Each structure stands twice: as C-alpha cells, then as structure tokens.
Image: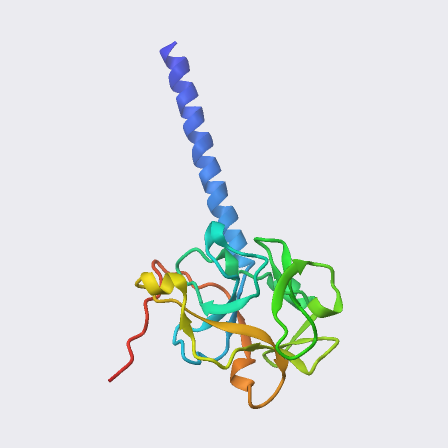
Length: 201
C-alpha cells in the first residue's frame, strides 16, 4: 500500500514538473513571436515609448484609444505585444487580445483603436522606411503627439515613474519625422523594470 502511494506521488510530481516545463517552453516560444512597436527616437523619455493600451493587467481598456507609454521592460507587458508576422501582412495585431489597430478615420488627428481584425482599409498598414502608414492613404502616418510626456496614473504613485503621450493619425511630414519613426523590437530580457534616468545637472 505504501509503495503504491509512493509510486502515485512520484507520478504526480513528474506530471507537475513536465507541465511546468511545457508552460515555460510555451511562454518562451510566445515571447519569441512578439515585438514592441517602439518609437525610433527617445523624444523626452530616455526609456523610449511603445504603442500601448491604456490600463494594466485586468484593467486594460481595449475600447480606449491607443497611446504611447514608457516601454514596459521587465514587467507585465502583454498590452504592448504585437505579432511581427501580422505586421508583414499589413495588420498591427495584438495577439493577447486578438484585435488589430484601426484608424477611426483617414483624417489628421484620427484616434487609433483596437477592432476585430477584418483587413479593411483603415486597418491595412504599410511598415516602410520606419514609418507606419495606411496603404490606402500613404500620406497618413501613425504619429506620437507633440505635447510633452506626462506621468501616468501608476507613474504618479510608483517609483517606475512611467510616462505617456497621445497617439493619432497624422500627415507624414519632415516636421513630425521624429514622432513618426518606429522599430519592431523584441521585449528585452531583464530581471527588473527600468527605472527613470536621472538627468545630468
């Protein structure tokens, strides 16, 4: 009887270890298949901005307009993950939510929202020369707002001091160039979140 119990315990332990190993491998595989859409220039945030859904974890608001936020390195960041294979096909798809970035319209200042992926003109993008523009309106680019970055709600109470700015569709132009260039970059593997840079005196 004791031997049988011991055998069962060993089997259960092995099953748990196998499940944990599989979960780790699955998480690593998923991590390899996602990227941040990161601003090419730091602007006023040395840690750089990434396209982000407002909110955090279970408070993420997928119905809200997208913004840019301090890139979430070393912390929970599923609300900044994009599928690089989908980007090549013209879709800015966020795999955690199964939704795609769509412009509310083709007008300057149009908000960027998450919608069901359907390939319509307002969610069909071209990533070329570091710009993200609508294929049907190549003169319209995803643009970070010109205003200074502001502390997020969490940034006001947490030592990470995360920053955010608005994001919208805008006319592709040399004047807005620094706010219209992007790069696809895998989340960095860090053991902790990046703390604010101290400005030199």
